[in-house]
Length: 189
Image 1 (spheres, rainbow, N blue to C red):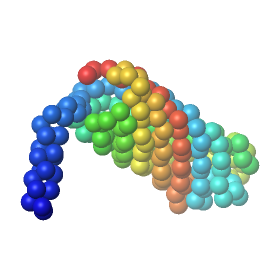
Image 2 (tube, helix red, strand yellow):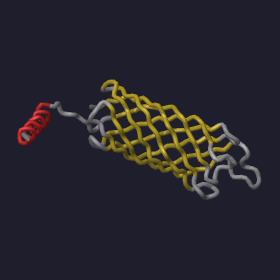
Image 3 (tube, rainbow, N blue to C red):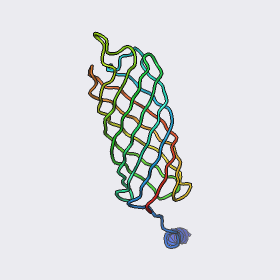
Image 4 (cartoon, rainbow, N blue to C red):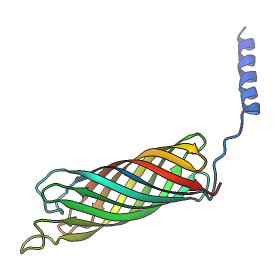
């Protein structure tokens, strides 16, 4: 009885593998899109504010190019605005590499990115003893998300990102967390 079950199980697995359609991931595929969502900045001492968190809205434009069927070159330009006290604007972008599992209609992905950011605090700034209104930062981030392929040329999805802003004028580092709904156009398959 056990041998019969084992034989049937093995025969079923081999049949599925032999007759299942192949999943196809694509190299050299281009993606261009954008997103809109929530942004959270956690000041670490170099943004002139007494707030412990700055909630706001963020936007992003992104592009990816398939280096292999699993790894993408990623480029992103983004910004966020937190209407706190003081209002804070972050703008910048980065480049990096991402890992993509694109063998299904649902496509999970994650990556690492590095880039430059400008942090602007609108008031008070620039006065005697205060930091400048805008400072440049090095940004390091871990983006992640899941996309749904509506067609070969169009996807929608959700993404998130955790990042740190280094090299602030007063030392320390600030953290940024974002969550976006996104859409993108795809070609090159």
